[in-house]
Image (cartoon, rainbow, N blue to C red; front, side):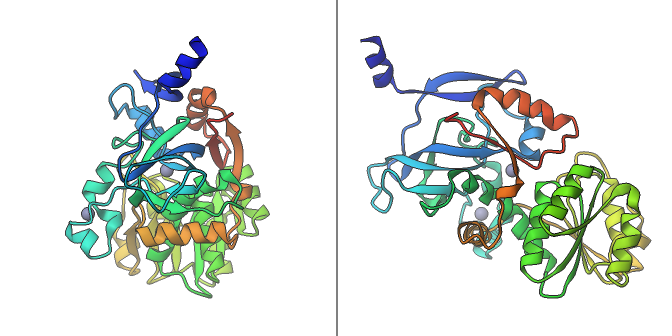
Length: 347
Ligand SMILES: [Zn+2]
Ligand SMILES: [Zn+2]
């Protein structure tokens, strides 16, 4: 009888962040809005944004993080016609307002209202849970043939997609990548798919090895990477993606760039950076900060994963159950050599 009650009450497990710590708790199941659905989460990725929310205690107690995810529809709202139970979706977690001048100009990635209400980052609850509610406007269809975990990589791939678009990469463009974490590797893979010649560098041997395995040129920090990249590109790359997140790497990127080149920032920085104007001004190097993605870029990232034009599967270095969320966040802090960590709440 009690088991029956449990089902009627419908309580899911979620990783709850309170007082700076995660604990797996049972909480009421989400219910779909009339024009929304509830998804069973297939997988949820973690990134530097999650880690900085965790570390800086930005959110009130009781928060459910997780903005890089995909799932299977388990319940639809009263007005929903185009989605059915069993359909698979990746979720675009930023609710662009659609009314501001940036949204109107197709620059939704800068929509302040949308970014401030991002799912799992201060907006609606995220996907470090068995179930998550999502509005129809956020759903993008995934083919049922795709391995369920891969859908969680659409969101971070979209972040890199924006950066590569901003860098204006085309066939033959020479590209440098500083920092071969998930975003650096994704940017390198997208650039190569667009016909660019890509060379990366990182301080961590395993990450350089990952880049080699993916077919990208890459050098370790103690192997004079900047000298070698400048030689191999005949004077420096036209585009340098700074993906290490270290403030001092911004100036380094300017010096690595070719005269007249572009530095695209695809990381977040938490301390001030020192800049020598001459490194930029005298050499005509542009600085382009890349933030989030437009709906079109999210869809391009999804298409490239669904069609397997970009193989992201090798970048998933480990998959963990909800119970390990706390330990995984601690691992982030220790300069780990993981590439992409996923949480699978069904495990
Ligand atoms: Zn993220
Ligand atoms: Zn807007």
